Image (cartoon, rainbow over all chains, first blue to last red; front, side, top):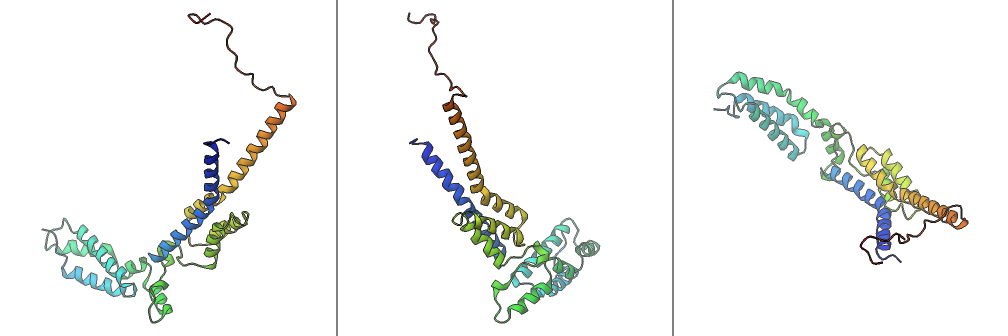
Length: 37
Length: 201
């Protein structure tokens, strides 16, 4: 097992999987800020 | 000396502005009056004290107070929302008027679907992402830029999947070519047979 490549690959994969969650958080923050303004 | 902002024409104008802005939330009303007062101060900064013509011209340039309030989102809009909220007045019921931002600001079913869809999108095998992105574009509560950013973020796993798949397929094809002998593997580097000058014999 490549000790540097594998963790990097894992991190990248998890990051990519988390991207839609980040999009959801971004949209909800934008909407809440607009609502509170 | 600059014109005093207590000039009757200015105080009269600001009083009319306050009256026109009666329907705005108190904080916003004070902010608007202060803003207009600041504009007048700037406009009259170079005018000499007692220059009534300059004062009247500055006030004239600002226009009708009712129009300023209308541009701020409109008294009627706020009034209607306050009436709809009913007593006791609920601050949470306030929303940006469409005229001000072009966007609504409340949470609706479409917005909830967009956010939840994106949040659980990966767990639903991508269906949630498609639903979330579609709902985000249907909704009028976000700007196109926000929708675009959410779309790009939402589609990243799909892009990664496609690129990963391509890498796998291409890598597999190259390996099978090498195995079948149609492509020769690169020869291992060999040491030069020519003696290096100055090197050991």
